[in-house]
Structures are given as structure tokens and as C-alpha cells.
Image 1 (cartoon, rainbow, N blue to C red):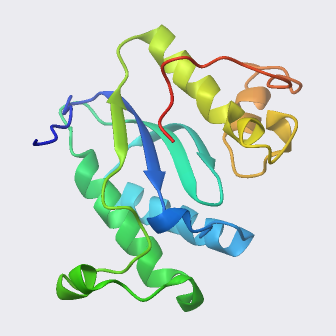
Image 2: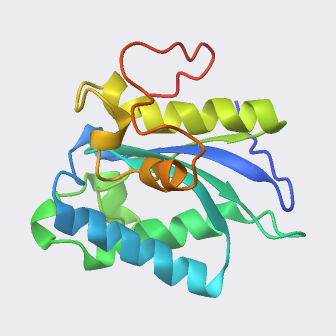
Amino acid sequence: MRYRRAFLPGGSFFFTVVTEQRRPLFASADAVEVLRMAFRAVRSNRPFEVDAMVVLPDHLHCIWTLPPGDADFATRWRLIKTGFTKHCDPGLRSEPNRARTAKREQALWQHRYWEHALRDEADFTRHVEYIHFNPVKHGFVSSAIEWPYSSFRRYVEAEVYPSDWGRGVMDFEGIGYE
């Protein structure tokens, strides 16, 4: 079976990117900062909007909107992953298996990532809320505002959500990409 990605120039996409074997690569503030630097470096040469994002210890979710006429999120992800891999603490790198060694790859990231082209405003909103609720879902915090590696505070400052949004249980049926 061959996997096909949705390429929609100028589209908005939801992504889930997971570390190899769910290793907690982003457990430290320093590692999250290296990831931010990789994003900034790629965005400076290949612009895109990060509409929402959360970084958890072993995976991240984000929504990007690409520029009109541009559908190349795959190159951007390759460059972000490469940038993080080159600049992260060498202690985060594990010994790659034989197949990765033959391809000269590090063992930091799962090969694939989940991508979903957002269909409309309601789909966009559901995925933004899923992103912001994710640290609560995984039991890291009791409220979305408590998680430091999220775009949620930006949404609170813009008065999109109250600061106490995301307490308790929320249902995101159909958005189970972990």
C-alpha cells in the first residue's frame, strides 16, 4: 500500500510528529528551544504560519498555513527535523539501527508523520482545541494554560479563549492521531 499525502497549495494542515520509540526528547526547556530555533530557521527561508502548536515530551501537534501557491510542507518538516537533530544535545541521540545507519540517519524521529488538510473553519477550530487540550489529555497539567510549550497563551491574549478553558474532560471524537 502506498501512502498519499494531501498537497493543497496555500492550505492549512494539522500535523502530529512523534519521536522515535516515543523517547521524551522534548522533556527539557533546552530541547524545546532547539526545536524553536529549527522552526525559526526554516520559516526564515520557507515561510509558513504556525497557527497553533503544542510540544509534549515525545510528540508535537501543530497547524500550519502555507503561502498561496505553496504545498511543500514535506521539505519544511525534513529541514526542521534535520535542524533539531544537528543542534540538539548529543546525549539525546541513540544508536541508530542497521537500516538507519545504512541511510546515514539518526534515530530521533519516527519516519512518518500524520498530516490532515483542514477542510473548513469548524475543522480548523476542532484541531486547535485538540492541540491546546493535549497536555491535559495526557495528564501533564490540569488546565491548558499551565502547559508552557503551547500556543494557548497566545489565544488567551487574543481573547479567543478564557484562561480557564480546557479544564476537565473534552471530547475530540475523530481526532485520535497518537
